[in-house]
Length: 291
Image (tube, rainbow, N blue to C red):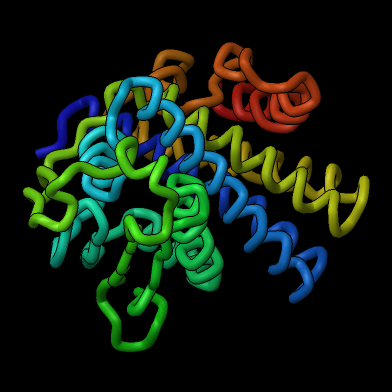
């Protein structure tokens, strides 16, 4: 049975998925096949940045930065409990696992947007590992939900000690780096879901603005603004449905508990141009249409 905290985490995960869907689908609709270049590059930039930030955070806390420590952290403190993983291999240099259930896949498939899965999964996971390992690691996707007949995704992640300098070894690995590690607990608990998803959402929008501008110049701002407006409208409708399903009033309190951009407060650490873009095209519209 899901707890109240799980309910909030799941809703915020779905709100993040709506944001991704809206940004990516807007570019693809406006720019056609060429837009996939921006979608893929932006997905990778977002995750690369997130992986690099996590690496720096762990170094600051004097933690080893290897695949064992990475996945124990991700699977317990940064994952929606609806993700279900079956582990095959885990040590400091290798991580091989099957994703059996995925809320991002379920959500996009239900909305008939399954074509957005592959550009996300191929780029996001690879980018995250690349950022975390300073481009020394590799991530291979050998199975995928979107392929006919597949009912899982399989990822193989590798971060070899041989691929980094001797100076980096002590900060990344222990003397038992090839010993089998205990698999992460199947229980997930995001301590501050609003903070986590707001952080990841900010990186996502920043990445779409940055990569869009490289290819389309200032027109990318209009594409991002359109995607944000669409995301706000769809998020409003989605959260109204969730409030009704939970027997709750669709009011400010529900919005506060179940979304990550319910006001401008979570945007306080963003750069000014990004803060203004999100505030005008997402926060204002979400509140206006929800409450």
